[in-house]
Image (tube, rainbow, N blue to C red; front, side, top):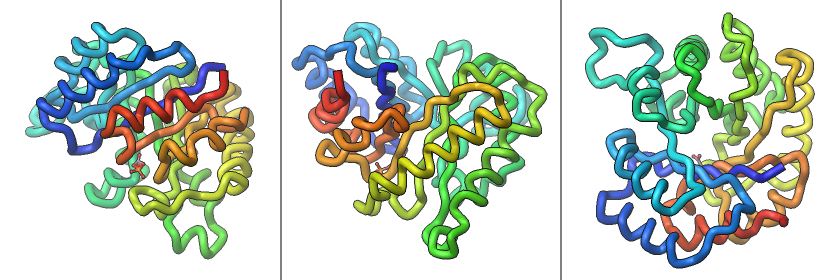
Length: 247
Ligand code: PGA
């Protein structure tokens, strides 16, 4: 399967940075070795879609979606509006949303339902904190996040679902989970999906991914791709990560 490389730009990149990023990307011919995706700030989605279209084979998504349908919810962005913009995917449940914006499992379940209703492909992020890891609660936490987000939904089409395993302690810290740790967790998540959703779900790893560690992660069949924060802001690093996928 083609590996999936997602750049999560978070609240970064000015318009001028975006232009420079795509100019740089266009210099090196991107092989169709991976499915490359970028989630910019929502306000930049239309311009990114235009640039990505010119460059070809880059998909553009949103970092978040409202938990409700259209209505009096100042500042929110609905799944319907994202659909209108023809975004290719939406990230839901990133740990920054969970921790800094207090998104509970219940809220995340509603966001999943909204995205499903509007046929938006979802990247659902799950991950444990350092203290949960130290208490050996990683799998309990992950399964709880999966169950609450996915099993309470009336939607049944999981073909558009991707899961990103992002240990919170590895995000933006420079510390990555070891290859072995990631493989073991991915195997368990895949089993959980087979058992509860009855489908094979692609699982990405995220947390301090860089051009140096990407090749090892991408060498495993249990790692379907990577969710990249910091290193996705520099075209050369993002490109190098994309190019490190096995042929
Ligand atoms: P990072 O972020 O690569 O900067 O650790 C990953 C993420 O938050 O998705």
